[in-house]
Image (cartoon, rainbow over all chains, first blue to last red; front, side, top):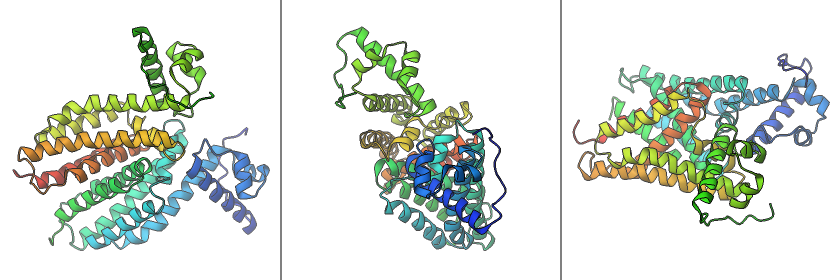
Length: 209
Length: 209
């Protein structure tokens, strides 16, 4: 590819958008299973059922496609978790979110890790644009968790001095570290220990104990 | 390479051991910077100053070399942290360990991540032997942390019902998640938030508050 300019305009036709979406979903699946480097244009062509020229009609180059995958995975994670986090008003609601995260990891026996975490580990040191996109994704994720905790603060479930920023980052790191360890250990023990310890600490900040 | 049998015997001569060690150290550095897949025999030859035949005299194949790198990185991490963790007898000693972990990450602005965590993210889903080795490494690391916490339990610094297994896993996950996020975010904020939250919870288990 001669250009690295992102093709930011969404396709103007419904069919064009569907093709673009199909390419991104197939690329996301391949990158999740084989990494960005392990995802080739021929494999993507086969899985998405499109031609190379279609791929490069919608994406300036592989970096552009990778950024689209990061946006897609971020949207998928937040769409899954935001509704739970938006109604965080109690420790029970926080534990319900925890169960969703743990159950998802358990379903695959720990394999796969986090789609964003794995891409970050692969790309952050070598691809500044991907790193920027991933940093923004993690910030968005931490913000959604933080807003949930702020809801608990607002309704008086947590003491006023509770540091929602710090706890949101701690929960996100617990998820990332726990999922990474689950990939090697094929158990969710570390994921559960990490999230549960942060939740136990939040419990200690709760007004009603 | 025709064989996947590991060459487990250490070289019998001092010079042989030095050559083997130089190859492993060079491979560890290359894999840390470029991943296992991104580490080629020509690059390793150049960095280690050895021939291909020397590399394959000491290592049956790249998988064998990768496992030697995992053992090398595990030893390096434990050699760095075990002395601090062996004398964990107080919250202050635990915080001293925390400072070592955070300072190391801060030194490189968050780039690099954890050598074991990055290899695990890259290899666990595709290389069962590497995954086994990495799972054993993480278990060894968690065990060293756990033994430190057991020391605090033994000297009465922590309440008897404190779950050292769970807290050790939570601390390891906090380190892994925090280092992964530092790679994308180029700050140690999440690493500090995660470890400090677990330590704050341990503080709440302390007998003297």
